[in-house]
Every structure is written in C-alpha cells, then in structure tokens.
Image 1 (cartoon, each protein chain N blue to C red):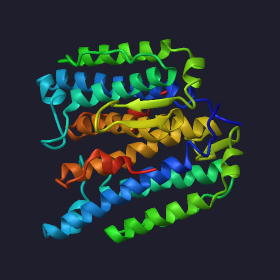
Image 2: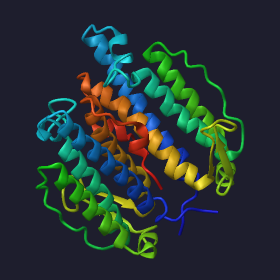
Image 3: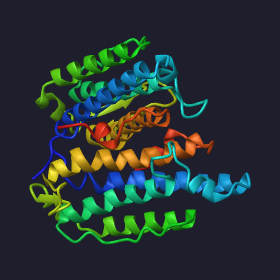
Image 4: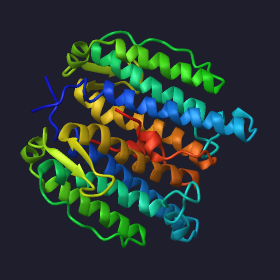
Length: 169
Length: 169
C-alpha cells in the first residue's frame, strides 16, 4: 500500500519529458510553416529577466537527470549547455531519457533515506533526505521549468494544448 | 523504504498552494503600489484563448481538493467559482487547504488501488487506479496551473521569484 521512489520519479519524468518533446516538435513545425526564425521561439522569454525557452528545457531536463543520479548515489552526468536548435533540444531530452532509464529501479529506491547535499561547501549548501529531495524540491522545480517552456510557446501562438504537456504514460 | 500516497499528495499540495498564496499577496501589493487596477492582473492571460489568472488559481486548487477527496473515497466538495478579487482567491486557497488537511492521512493512503472514475457516463470517462490518478494525472495538472498562475504574474512585471513558487515545507 505504498509508492516506490522509482514510481514517483522516473516514469513521471519520462511522461513529462515526452510531453515536452512533443510540444517542441509542434513548435518547430509552427516555425517552419509560418516561416518564423526558430530563434524567435528558442530565445523567447516571458519577461526580460526570465530564462528563454532553450534554457528552460535544459534546466527541466537537468532536474530529472540529477534526481535519478542523486537518488541512486551515482555521479550526475555533466551535459554541456550548447543547444542552439530544436534538434539539439530533442537530443538533450533523448540523452536525458536514456540516462534516467538506465538507472536500475532498485538503486533509485535505495535513495529513500539517503542524505543528499546540494551545492556542497557553498553558502547555499542544503541537505535533504531522499524523499524530500524528490517530492518537495525536484518535482516543483521540474514542473516549473517544463510548464514555463510550454507557456513561452503558447504565449507565442504555437498551437499546443494541456494534453500535449501532460503527455502519455 | 517507500512513500505513502499521503506524503506524495497533501504536504506537497500544501507547500505549493502556500507558495501560490504568497505569490498572490505580492501581486496584490504590486497592484496597490503601482496603482494598477487589480483586474488587470486577475484577468490577465498569456494568450487570448488561455484561462486568466483567477481561473488558473481556481483550477489548481480544485486539483488538490479533488485528489484529496477521491483518494479518500469521499465526495468532492463543490465550491462556486465566484472569486473576483485577490482576497477571494486567498479565501479559496485557505478553504482548499482546510479541506485537504481535514482528510485523515490513513484515508488518503487507503486510495492506493482505489478505482477512480473521472467524468463518469460521458464520452470522456476515464478510469484510474489511485496511484496513477495522483502521479500521472493530478500532479502534472496541479503544477501546470500553479506554474501558469506564476508565469502570468511574472509576465506582467510582478517581482516574484521561483523561491516564492516553491514555497516552504
């Protein structure tokens, strides 16, 4: 009568990153159809001091990658933030999905009471237990960036709906 | 070595609805300071066919309310969507928090394998088991609307940050 950490992480990240990938495919098709410079979408922001679409996607993917690694107690793989096209963003999502799905479920579940230290040795160091790291920290940040990516595209007239965001499972 | 349904629902809704309440307080203060008609924010949208701020808050709160009720197997309380001010939205959030916190944790946990039917008897009828209803359906929709409420306000120049959105726990 309980959930595993795995259930509440990898399949949910997979579902939502799949939705994000579909949303980005529609955005790319929209740019092509309307002869819009893809950078007009890739660099779009909701406010001058918010991150643009490309950065929102990178950060969202990184929250999934980091959670899978830290819960399992393995090193977080380093990905360069060098994406400059829709194809690059799709590759970033695909690489992230491949990594999180490669981590054995039992290793994720073993992170239940693991002590997870973010930004160690800095003034912003923060220590979590595994459950709280997933539920109270990772999920809010992950959904914040995936939704904001969607909102940037919707605000720019891309024809997407919440069903695309929610994805399939 | 596992999570309860309760852990993955009520405390997380409470955290994020608390963040939403703080974000709305800052938005109201911003409108007062800048002598902006509150409706300019309450009725703001990111695109003409998206819901405005007030509706985003109502829907977000309803996903939390419905999940608490359905997982516990009790009737979903009906709230009228009559909010027209920031004070009304704060009251809606407070009422929602009071309800979800009134549901015994054991009753939520008992929803683990409960069959939950959405829109029964309609062409869009959909049946979930409790865990999937919470993880794959409720959490994405809940975070979608809370984040979009934040994004609407941020887009309109309210000085809020992701820390406000994430809230405290």
